Image (cartoon, rainbow, N blue to C red; front, side, top):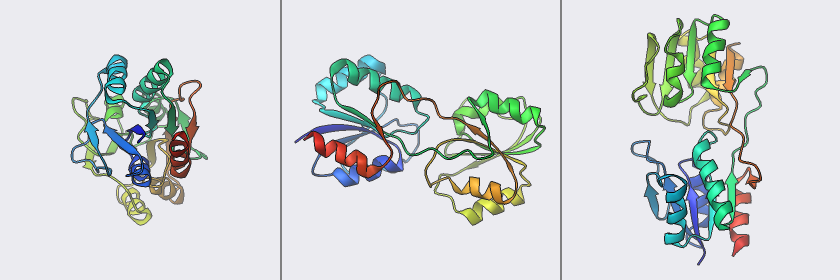
Length: 242
């Protein structure tokens, strides 16, 4: 039976594991940064590989025949490492990348730092910040008030002077997002272009309330990688290898 490493931690990765298990020997890998993660079917490993060299050794020791990268669109380091190692050792490699959101009228920036600069330049006063715990520090010096939503507490980050921290994970409903923006008098939403349906509702709610959107663009995929946008396409690619 073909043995596949599925770099996961996303809803798409869990759905792909369900689609392939038990016909394919899928080993799902989670980074381990989120406590009590939703687990996919089949074997699971949790934690890093130890960089490029560690991943190369792990693929060899575990007899991996193919790698599917279904990590978060902003997990750029893991995606780069997987692409590099698979290219070097000749292991078939696919990226399952959920389609990005159409930014529409959003102000598109390249980083959390640029997003913080836009917040300051536009004099936004009440900001809904949903870029995840790793991006919060860029806003530490802001004069605005922030509603910060993250899955886990931003470890070690200096938070904005005025803020409220809400710990939760999606999916989120439109009516709830609408009430959240309205109740907190939000005038700007800062988000990453994560894509997908689980957190899309905040964009729809922002549009309904005429709330400005600042959107951090996705990092580019490594050159030359093959990518698909749906679970069916990824499952077809895996089964086609066998």
